[in-house]
Length: 591
Image (tube, rainbow, N blue to C red; front, side, top):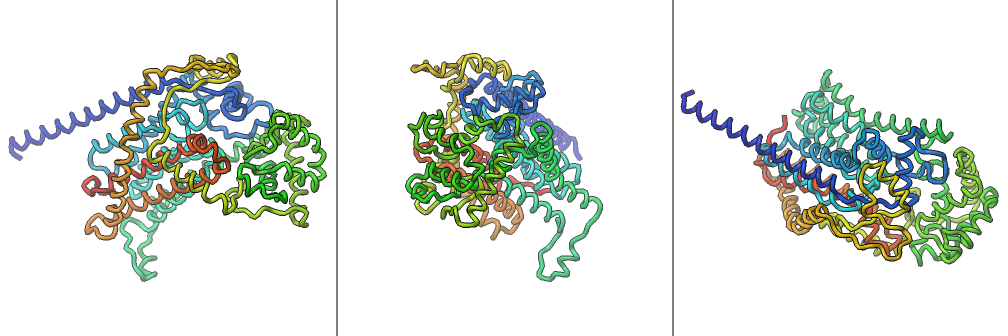
C-alpha cells in the first residue's frame, strides 16, 4: 500500500469516526430534549374515576406500603397490576413518574432501532428510524402520555415486544450469546405487558407466530434448500449443541409468563384466599358475565338497543331460576329504583359492562366483597351452576348472537354497519393520528386526593386541578411544552398521507421483489412476511376494538381515542420495514 493510499484510508477512517460521533451526539441531544418534554409536560389525573385512575393509584399506594393491593372489595382484583407496579417503582426509586415514563419510552425507541441493525447498512438510516419512534405522536398525545393511566405504558411495552421479536428473527443464525439478551428481555416485558390490561390477547398471535417462524428456521438451518423429496428434507436437518441451546431459549418467554401468572395467583390466594389473577376477567364472576350476556330476555332489546348487554328483564329471569341469586332480589330491585347507579331509577337500563360494576357494588352492600373473596367467589359459583342448569333444561334461552370473547357483548346482523363505521374511523386514528393532542386537560377530584397522587408520583397535578363540582372550570392555557408537542404531532399528521402513499407503493414493490428479484429475494420475502404479520395484527386489534366499542355509537370518538393507540407502533414498525425494504441497497446480508 502506497503512502497516498494510506492517507486516503486514514482520511476515510477519520471521516467515518466523525460521522459516528456526529450522529451519536445528535441522537443524544435529541434524546435529552425528548426526556425534557416528558418531564415538563402537564400531567392530569381523574381521582373521581373510582374504577380507573383512582383505583390504580390506590393499588400503587398499597404496594408501596407493603399491603399488596389493599383490603379486598368490589374493585380490588378488577384491574391489571403492571401499571401500579410501575408507579410504585418510580416512588421507591424516588424518580419523578414523568422521568421513568420518558425513560421507558426512550428505551423502547432504542430497542426497536437496534433490532433492525443486522439488516441496515448505514447508521444514518438507523438514526432516522430512532427519531421516527422517539418523536412519535402516540408518545405525546394525552391519553397515551400525560394522563396518569395504564395506557401510558402499553405503547412502549408493545414496541419492546416487537423489537425483541424482530431482533431474534434477524439474529437467529448468530450465536446464542447474540440472541440471549433479546429473549431475556422478552421474558420480562411480555408478562409486564400482559398484566397491564385485560384485553392484551390481541398481540399473542403475532408473538407466537414470530417465535414459531424463527424457531423453525433455526431447526432447518440457514443452508436449507426446499425440495419435494422428503428424505432430502430430513437429511438437511441436523442438530448440534449450539442449535439445541438456541432452541431452548425459545421456551424462556413461555416460562416467564407462566411464572408471573402463577406468582400472581399464589399471591392473591395467600392474601385473599382466591387463586386468580383477576376476579373480573377470570374466576366465577367472569363466568357470570358470560352467562348473563348470553341470556335471552324475551324482548328485542339486543336488536333495538346495542348499548344494553344485560337488561333489567334478563336479570329478573336470572333471579327466577337461581335460588341463590334470588336471595339478592331486593338489592337488584334497589339498583333499578333507588340506587346511584341508575340515578334513583331515572336510568332504566345500564349500558355496556357498567351493569357488572353495578352488580359488584350492590352485592358489596349485602356483605360480599368485604375481605371475603373466597365466600364471594363461592356465591357466584352457586349462581353460575344454577344458571347453567337452567340453560340445559330450557328454562333459559341464549341469544342468537356472535361472540368474539367470553365476557364481551355479542353482535347481530344489524350491528355490522356500526362496526364497520367504527372500524373505518379506528384506522383514521392510527393512520392519520386523528385528534392527537397534548394539553388542556384537568385533574379532577378533591384537593386532598389529587395532592396525594401528586406526592406519590412526584409530578405537579394541582397546577391544573379543578373542583369536580365547579360548574365553570377555568380555561387552561397551553404550556410551552404542550405547544412544542402539538407542533411535532402536527408534523406527523400533515405528512401522514404521503407516508401512507409511499407505504402502499413500497408494499407492492416488496411483493414484486419477492417474486421477481434475481438477487436478495430472501430479504424481500422476509420483509413481506414481517409487514403482513404486523398489518394483520393491527387489523385484528382495530377490529376487536371496533367490535367492543360499537355498542355505544354516541361515544365513538371518545372510545376510539382511548382504545386504538396500541395500533400506532405496530403500523409504524410496518412502515419502517417497508421503507427499508423498498431498496435492497439499504439492506446488508444477515450474518
